[in-house]
Image (tube, rainbow, N blue to C red):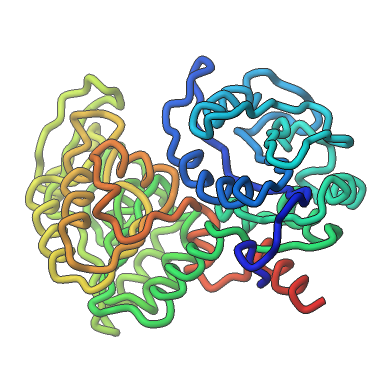
Length: 389
């Protein structure tokens, strides 16, 4: 790919696709991680007196309809504070007036008709805004949309921003030459959303630790009771096949020995530690127990490389966050090369204040997993094709 850092941006109109999809509650941004991640890219362009047009999506509004709840106005205000200069929010996407040394933020790309289906008309409209298009939103690189893919087809120049480059280098290191043992931690509510990645990762790792609803499905597959816990009955055969594959190929899928259960799903629910075989029919598994957390900690301590995507339990509730806390701190203290990604994972990293100790934090969720799965990411593919022109 052509890299932004190798181009002369002086007084050029530079359109940057960033990932500014931050959590916003009542108009207040609750996590600025993704905003902070794009700042170095913006400063490189500003130092070269570029005229910067920044764009991103936020949330999931109905395409083509303007919904104030999903406006990027709070993001524009936050960027203004970080950069120490005005960052106006522009609602007109067809004709943007920005001078060298200035920066503007386009309103939510998902307010535009044709964004999701990569409409050529919208792609060309966005491409006409710039001399150089910079794709620096790794979290959206798996989507073939107008603001991630189509614009790169039609822009005079299309290149990869520093964030994309660093993401690919870090993940490439893990995929090509990991230090062993290679341990992957994959949590989340459903096996179905991560089945392909679980199968692929299992062929590569030495140990696969599953958490959350995914772990419940594996427990059920092993013939253990899961009570009224979230699990996927129809995917029990897939989980059993993975357990058999692991055993035949001398790989580990350590299942919980003990768990934290409750009879209701709420922040105030009483947490009870139980051996996994003692889970009652009216109880939900909401976290791993202390013995299991300690076992996972010991596995992480011996790892050479750790991939982390997803929590071990419902860590948003204080009573059920201990497993994820132990995991995050174990990864932070480990000497292993660690890569973490995904929305819930980023939230856990922030909650337990371990960001400085993780080797590389990916801003991507779906893109992170699809790259590990071996898939070609559309936004990366088009950048590679454009570099050959």
